[in-house]
Amino acid sequence: MTLIRPATSPTDLEAVRKLCWDYRTHLASVSPIEAELTETFYPVPKYAALMDALETEHARPQGIILLAELDGSPVGCAMTHALDPQTSEIKRVFVAPEARGHGIARKLIGALMDQARTDGYSRVVLDTSVNLGPARALYANLGFSERGPYQDTPEDALPHLLFFEAPL
Image (cartoon, rainbow, N blue to C red; front, side):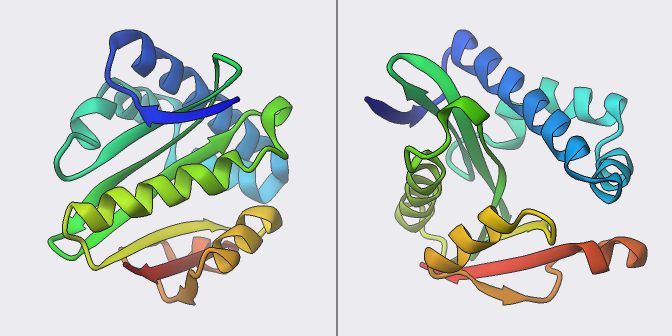
């Protein structure tokens, strides 16, 4: 059975941090370009600092951290934070390889969108790699449209990234 819920306890947050590190490792393994982008955007010291600040960066009521469990084990995470009063950004959607195929990423994103709508945002945005085909297909299937960058992005990274937006 799949359960999607807010990560609130220290145990939950530790599970999310582990999943986020697994996500970083996964991204770096996709291709040499992904490895370079991962090191550019999330060098280990910067990522470690981000992991230490997760519950602040994605605090309620401007954001949320979700944990996905499959048969009681943590297998996925996703989170949001505010970019501005109308825009919630989705970050670090990850499902462990052994849990894929259960619709967990779809449930995580749906729950994030529902929460952002409840919180009064009018749109959600996210970015992903050109090389993450299944993620791109999922976002399109959930009603996201491609758009231009919504934040400063290094010019040399732009050909490798896609930006998406969905109204709420």
